[in-house]
Structures are given as C-alpha cells and as structure tokens.
Image (cartoon, rainbow, N blue to C red; front, side, top):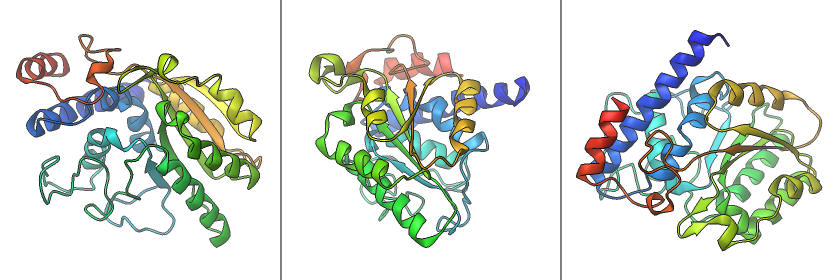
Length: 272
C-alpha cells in the first residue's frame, strides 16, 4: 500500500477516535481507554481491504465473521460500523434504553453485530465454533476475533484455543489487544499471563507480533495470514490504552469511564 493510502487510513483512525469520544461524552458512561487503543487495528481491518463485508447485507453468506470478544470496547466497534456504512445517516445514542448501541455488542439490538458479547472469554469460544461451522459448510470465509490480554486470564479461553489448534482452523484469526492493563491495574500484577505467544504456539497456532499503532505494519502482518498451513493465527498487537490522547495514555483508570466536560474539550482540540 502506498504512503498516501496509509495517510488516508491514519486520518480515518483519528476521525474514529474523535467520533467515539463524542459518543462516550454524550452517553456519560462507557469504555474510553481501550476503544482509543484499538482504533488503528479496527481501521486496518475495516478500511484496509482485509475484511469481506457488505454493509447493505449484513447476513451475506460469504462475509468474514467479525467478533469483538472484549465487548466493552463497543464504542469503537459502533463508530467503525458507522464509518463503514452500516448505519446510513442515522446517529444512534450509546447506552440509552431501547438504543441499538447497547453498552456491550448485542446482535438482538443491532443486526450488524455478528454475535452478542460482554462476559470476557465468551467471544473466543464463539469464534472457534463459527470457524468450525464455516469449515463444515465449506464456506471460504475467515473468522476474525478481537480479544484482550485480560481475557487470557479466563480458563475458557484456553479451552477454546486448544480446540482451534486441534481442529486445525486455518480460517481463524485472533488479534490480541496487548495493552498490559485491565480494570484495576496491570495485567502483570493482577494475573500471571506468562508468555502468551508461546502458550498459543504450544497449542498449534501461528503467532505474529506487531506494533498496534502502525497501520502499515498491521496490514503487512495481516497479509501473512493467508497461508493455508492448517494452523489458526494469533496476532499480538502491542497497544497503548488511551492512544492519541497523551493525558490519558497508559492510565488504567480510563479503562471504564467516559470523558468529563473538561477532558472532552481537551480531547476534541487534539483530535480536531
């Protein structure tokens, strides 16, 4: 991809950060830090020619299945879907009664959401099941699952990834948000995650690592997953919680809170 194309994607990521910040401020609640941190990865996936999707036909049989297992960064997901044309010109409100934009992704409320998620660890198992189903139905599509490092503390996560290795699901791609933070502090202090990449490799996965804020490198890494070597793929994206707003970067207190008025004004000046 040419430099000018990367610059367009970088501008798109900044717009997404701005719009999700506005969404959270209006709602008065939600998860700001992690949403900002994964904006570059989402931009690469949805606007870099990676994901197969049709915003006018969300149940298109040949679509790639996209699952946000760490459903708390739903503000990023919704904003990305809006930019990709899934909402048309409608601006729905986040976290309001009856709104399609629930606090965590809900397929019942919004058909563009592949599956409802929220409880950490749940989405990874669903992703493995969908990858198996695609194999059985001989549908040549992939399953992309966004997962967090905090989710690697869940026992069910490792049951799922062990099954993926056993069934040789080379149509399955996990992208792990490795920001080293969770709700109440550092993942290194709260849980002993060890070497995540080695744990996946031992269970039959191909593992890649990438700077989660370098869109060019993200796209190059994603281009490597096309090989059919009978192994599921894990991309560990090193990210910064709150990326793009230096006054909240790497601060776990912003894991689960929306910007107040002062923070909102300051953020919008930076993201204008």
